[in-house]
Image (tube, rainbow, N blue to C red; front, side):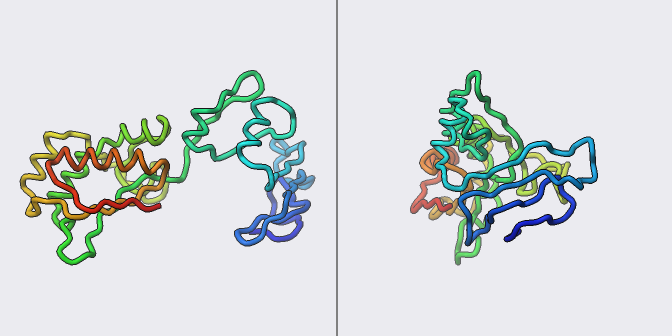
Length: 218
């Protein structure tokens, strides 16, 4: 984090004023074009002002109305994207995010049923990830087989996600040494949690396991 005006480095912009850190944030952060930027074909011609005071809701309304106060709002949630009206003044732009929706099985607890690979496979096939993306993510996102995203260092191109298959999930669950799912701890990095819990619960029932205490944390 840069905590004072620049220039810093050789980027296309210079930090003219303001600060934006985890523990310190000014009302505005102003970036000016760097006149010494090395690439003349990409040299910026406008200044950028980050408004750290305006609420996201007000910023979205400003973009939709075209009042000229706000040009760009970033990191919309799926609910905000669905509610965005757009129109002649604005449009919704979708790009690849760095966040991932994951399920973590707690294998550290003594006598944890998740130590059984058959049960883990059953839950993997029971969860309908596409339904979760449609309901909790508003249709945004894609299913990936591991935490490392495609195109990033370490991504294994030979891996494929488990396909949603209730019949195979039940078959795998029948081979599990644990006939009851006594606890499921799933960590989900997205919203809303209520939709995730519903999808998770539906998946647990599909493998014929009765779940006890269920928790979702973010």
